[in-house]
Length: 343
Ligand SMILES: Nc1ncnc2c1ncn2[C@@H]1O[C@H](COP(=O)(O)OP(=O)(O)OP(=O)(O)O)[C@@H](O)[C@H]1O
Ligand SMILES: [Mg+2]
Image 1 (cartoon, helix red, strand yellow):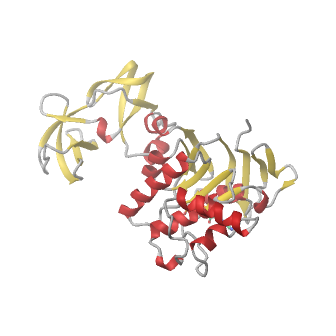
Image 2 (image 1 turned 90 degrees about the vertical axis):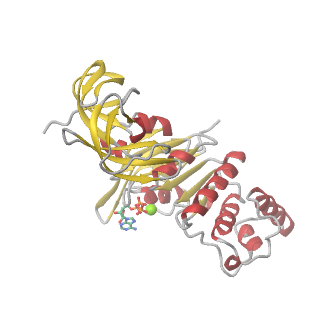
Image 3 (image 1 turned 180 degrees about the vertical axis):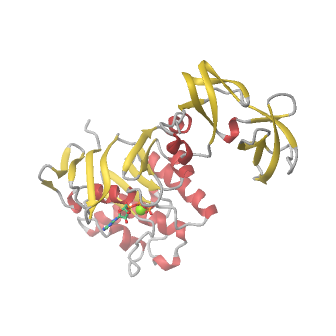
């Protein structure tokens, strides 16, 4: 079976300013891949190259075995079999739901209506065929946009920040809905986000982009626990870093002796996710609580150790930490170590 999408060594500059450097990305059938990175790192540009709205300066793009860009290939957007969903839904305001979903379809009116009805059933909007876009909620509009993008049976669905227009509560709901629609239908997709929680929770694999490069392409769990460097570690979740001396399977640090995920030796920096810190009264380093935020399911606690090290911890909610509480901090799970940056 051919691979739905292969980007190989894509390079792109605008006005002699390099924007993408050697972007290589392979997406397997049925896989949902997130492009995650800070603003301006080149996510939308990558998606636009895949869609055919821009052309790479170097490198190739292959969709289901057919080279569509690079090495003389110049396949236009409409022949690439990609579906697009944008941040602002971009529904045609003068067309009703049915008109929007059938817009890009070919064939008889009856066939188009049948396909549109299947898509509206897929996204759970049966019965709204005659509604105009202005009379739909944001979440419904996004589902119409999804139905429209899926109606021509694209090889790949491309979504650019598809949930960022929705408020926080609706965003969680709609992204859950979209995720199950795509997974149930076995759609291959690439979505862009700068929200690490969205990337980790929805994607099968995440490509972390930094300054026009893919810093790491891995499953969410791998990214979170085995980030390739400090920058990725800090971007895919909250991160504390503390200096330590590694002695193979363990390292000595201000919290005591802690186990390591991978053997290391010499000066290192340990990555401590906030939930990997244990706050209890018996063992570990002494600390004072500087601040505390309550989230219902848990709480975030800002700490300062006696040696001045600042840490952020996440703790179960039952114990109520308060500013100026004295606690002891330890960690018992195996930790990721990075070679120490020499100053
Ligand atoms: N058509 C263009 N002409 C000139 N510069 C461009 C063009 N499109 C993008 N850029 C620049 O390329 C860089 C990457 O832009 P891009 O839109 O891909 O970033 P992004 O990762 O999607 O960011 P955001 O999260 O803010 O949407 C930016 O510096 C942007 O200003
Ligand atoms: Mg963008």
